[in-house]
Length: 240
Image 1 (tube, rainbow, N blue to C red):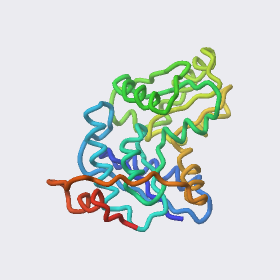
Image 2 (cartoon, rainbow, N blue to C red; image 1 turned 135 degrees about the vertical axis):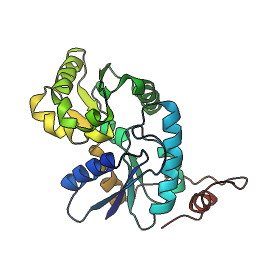
Image 3 (cartoon, rainbow, N blue to C red; image 1 turned 45 degrees about the vertical axis):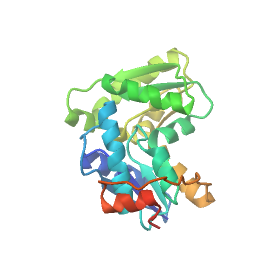
Image 4 (cartoon, rainbow, N blue to C red; image 1 turned 135 degrees about the horizontal axis):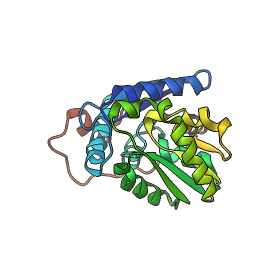
């Protein structure tokens, strides 16, 4: 089984961190490759950057989806998840979608990194039908600081403890660069924790079960000004 991790921000380090963790936990016989956006924000934290990342995600899929069995969006805003699910003939899985699913039916508390991204996450979870018990925001001063996930362990442990005190029965830790943190911290916290690494198991499950795909919409007119690959994808010339 061949999975593609598609990261529409422009930090190759995030792609590499996700792929490394995905390969560590993937079942035997599952390969995971990564691709990184060619334009847009290094780390997406705002609505404008996320809209640009959606275009980048579509462009990456148009260029790299051929021959894959499933796709994982390696960005924690699940950017362009619905669009890619409609356009591609394979299951597409989001990091936050999977982290929430792994939390089960327990009341959820959420840990995020950077207050500027809070509105994006609130909108995303609203769309999934989640009303978290509480949010915890871990700040970071630089992009480099964000990319060193282990440096945030103690802050996240304290945040999860506060979420439990607020009534959360499970915590989700959101962020593409920190995948694997939940597994690392799980022995040290009192409630279950999950993060975007859960997307690997969910993607494998969807591919193995032949999960039903959304109906592909039919455009009513042509597109202009897009790359040839993306023009073909939107028109229905789907990579397989």
